[in-house]
Amino acid sequence: MSFKKKIVLALLFLFAVLLNVFILTHKGSTSDTVEVRMTLSGSAADVIQLYYGNSAQFLPADQASCDYAGGNIEQELIFRIPSDAAYLRIDLGSVKASYRVSGAEYVYKGSTEEFALSSFAEGAAVEMNAVAHAEISGDALLVETEEGDPYITAETGPHAIAGQIAAAKSRNNLIKNIFYAVIADAAFLALFIFRKRFSTLPTELIQNRKLILQLAKNDFKTKYAGSVFGIIWAFIQPTVTVVVYWFVFQVGLGSGNVTSQTGVTYPFVLWLISGLVPWFFFQDVLIGGTSALMEYTYLVKKVVFKISILPIVKEISALFVHLFFIGLMLVLYAFGGFLPDLKVLQVLYYSFCLFMYGLGVCYATCSIVVFFRDLTQIISIIIQIQVWMTPIMWNIDTLGARMPSWLITIFKLNPMYYIVNGYRDAMINKVWFWERFDLTIYFWIVTGVFFVVGAYVFKRLKVHFADTL
Image (cartoon, rainbow, N blue to C red; front, side, top):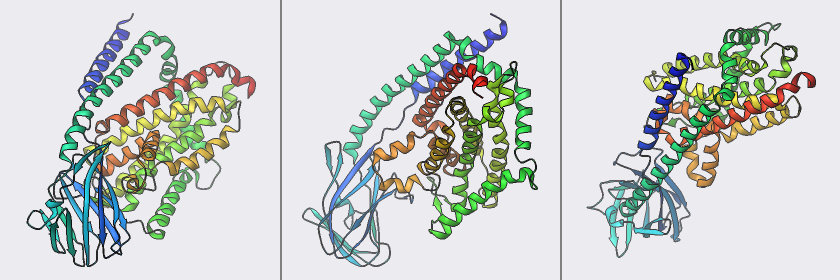
């Protein structure tokens, strides 16, 4: 074994050790969702909200709401809050009314805990606003509200249940971390044992890097050759799409500004563009990469040409436009008063994630489409569906409260959710990618599977490409 290979193996071993240490020492969340159930009767029909947090200062996104029918009818309201909430605020509509709250409790998988309604009575509450009177009568809370924004804030929460959840989650996190570490070690072991087989494709790409770059430049230029505006069309179409979506959702449907997880309010167009920029790249990669072999038929039929470089040629060609829109996105944020900080650099990481995920998918699709031409139309339909399945034009943080938890989980299993949410974490939420621990591990497992399967399918079918095309 050469000295260079020994150095590479040593670095990979060191990386594997550090990755294991990071995975096994990751604590993870010790919180889970708890249901708050209460029976409400009141004189006015309105929206009842329950804010939650670890302080008396609440973020707009940290709330759950229920519609109350009014007419002094007793109605059970169910809110979902995190188990580690230490402060709660009950918002009782916006008009003058009288309310009676009773039968309040926390519920978590069969465990129940009393909801301390006494914390919301006068003298015990942390803060009141537009509330004329609040007292405990028997086991019920009676509240008289005034017009405006009536609410009562109290220092309370599901403390007993939270302790049980924290202990259970800690055990689950440890088991999950061991599982992740085993998967990572198995992947590294497989890479070492089958290193000759796995290194074939990366070696071809590295050896032909200059040719790949040259072909990508030519592909980018020739795509719009013959048109009056040339490559300008590559930037016009996405820009028009952004403007149309902005007009439909903000002007037409009245979508307001978006508040980040840190409480900062962003214009809707900035929030929208941070989701559309990665989507445009993925769309171009999937369409272009799938048709790579059919578009370069004359190269596929050449005996000495490494056709494995063609999907990455199309991806790098799309990358030129993507880098332009990343720069445009940064400029728009700067003009909006949101200057880049260190966390914005994560855009490069998420672009790399998208690049690798798209490449793995395209190796499979470009191979299959040679024998099954209908795949092109199927992919077009999938793209139309996935653009709405991915939270790009809608905010999962706000609309997600109205959806069942299993549906939210399905949305998050979409690898593009990790990418789109990652761009917004970098630009808006200001969250490091390693703080999305489970999603990061899941994404790279899925990407690794796509890449291995894609490379395998490509290798098995490539001997038939020339004859079929």
